[in-house]
Image 1: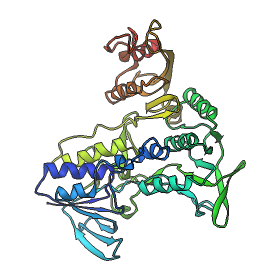
Image 2: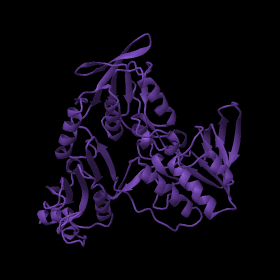
Image 3: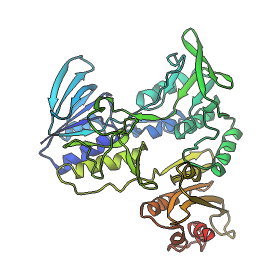
Image 4: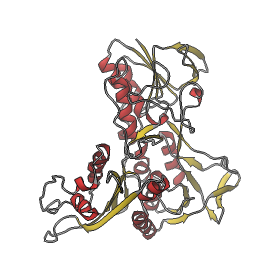
Length: 442
């Protein structure tokens, strides 16, 4: 069996490692544009901020390890053309410029995603950087040494984390987003208000509800970010407004969403026989709505890549869907979310209710305790839980993993009220705050 894997970050690495275990006789070839694999881009802000000193720790696999497993490892190779019906591809060696053909019995598309870069005037000026891979992180660190004013465009997780990292390093940081709130995709206003206040108190300038219209520069280097409402001086710009699937060479050959995300079934099969896909190149089943959505997360990628290997010859293990569960640390606060926000639920015209509590997470007779803010979103008629958010100076983010399971298993807010959670004063109260929010909803 001849297996070709295109792309090798999280999904590709997971697929290959599992295929070599399950099918040691398979001839596996991987084609990857970069000269490295498995880089944890979620660690870029930690690396930029100096918390992670050695970037080697941000890699959990290597081309050498794959080669040791018998994989034909082709780094710095770009797949130029794909013919899925004829099961052949055209490849270019980026070092020698040689092109050649290859064929497959099974193809695994794990081409990932790439940052969205709109066609804005001045976007090609020097010192406007992206945040995606290892090379980006190294360039960012080097450029930041000589920058006093840094503008981060995009107030999602990556933008907020980078703003904090640069701020901690003594830079003047401006965080710009066209939405009127940071992290609006993940959190409702009750939570973003606190997060915004925390950023502002740490001297991060928030420019919200403004859209970048152009960049201005001198001698080819960016010096100013211009929005529809203002202008901001800068020495360095980090552009991180989101990602798009890196799937253009497959367009017209497999079923996709409008944005190019490949649609796969619950066994990771595309619409073409013997062709699988996983990771950021794909749409996933989003359990709160039951529909395919584009949610590029490393956790989704690793799960999907593993399932490709499990289902390569026979459909054995179904994908359970995702809740888009995620978390972030913003200075002193630990924040996590799963499923939809109350605001997004209303955009989707779902009849949802959000119940929120604020209470101390453990008994007040303990020497220390911290407030926890928890909100659970559920359908009004069915009472099915479809989302949740948590924020506290204590790290209680694992509770969101519990609520993620609740959404996946279609639990109701009333069932959550009486779930069996342990009590121990070091950790919680006799009524765990997860119970309390369910009781409050009743």
